[in-house]
Length: 440
Ligand SMILES: *Cc1c(COP(=O)(O)O)cnc(C)c1O
Image (cartoon, rainbow, N blue to C red; front, side, top):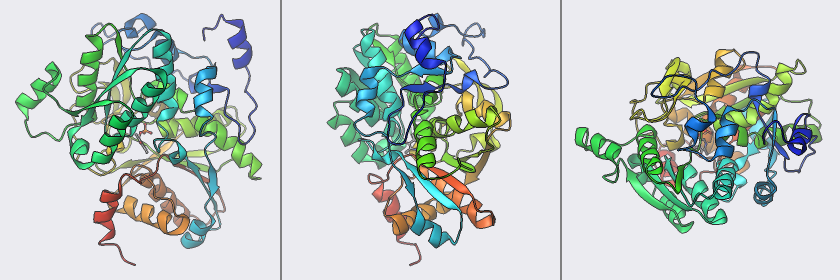
């Protein structure tokens, strides 16, 4: 995957033509096309831009190189494509009954990542990360998880590539979402409630605040600490970093080909929920490639929860990715590394920062952001269930609510693409408490 490898270069200089139904052969890296470079990550000690070697305690070399790469197309290894092919391409569904219920003449399409084995977009990166770690002789991965979507994705990927997977799950979710813990354990993962007594970071947090509901930032600190202390282990992050957003670019590449097959002339507007920014970046960046080359004017909207509004209320500055300040400094929209959001149902949207790539894109004006109240999000999820039958993940309902608001306020006939990042079949208790008070 280096620039010098002729075989890879040949496959990656030009846009790989994709037709509907095919699994992409390369990941798309928006860093190659942005008018200004994404600000570099900084070393937490020296505050200098990091180089590949700085990341090798955390990640295998291939992923460290992808993190810093500005190469436009990066070939997807055969073994990863083979796994993708068991559920990709994911459906792009035209939601006609939903359009009718909303009274809109816009065309609404749902890009449905809930079709993956664990029910979200997250295996797109988990499978790639497990593969590269296994290739470099790593035997164990540590990670954090909120609702358990990432933990179950990595446990699944670890099972495929023979890696042990140890997961720190945010306490609020560990206690309120036992089904995903069962899923992680079913795939062979080992799950701890975070903060835990197993790490120095966790012990320090608990000593200070024994009743904390936990946060993704705290869980990252614990997982990083354990990975750094074990030669055979590396850390895996489920969102935020450039290489994770890169892996998710299969979503948007497929959606573009599928829209074309459906007779649409691209998309007017793309909505996605944004927790760390990976599903939205993965869906939207391939569309933005055409915007950046002047061939389209697709708008992109990030929907985040009012309870954790990094893009709409955070500051754009350097911050750590974790609570204890062990990760590189990332230039991103952030609420601060020690921000602990309310325990909303959308556990995957409870992260204090936002992907540097997506933050930069928002900062450049290539994407907008809106904050959605939890009630509006659930209302949107229930409407989708009652029209199309799909029960969306609580995270995804934020994208739905933002899109529904847009089409109801606009008389334009648009092609609207909504990232349905996951299904909510394991989030029924959250829906249950909400449906009781729902009219109709
Ligand atoms: C984790 C998760 C998210 C949030 O993460 P992003 O990196 O912003 O995509 C959104 N939806 C689902 C279903 C998730 O599991």
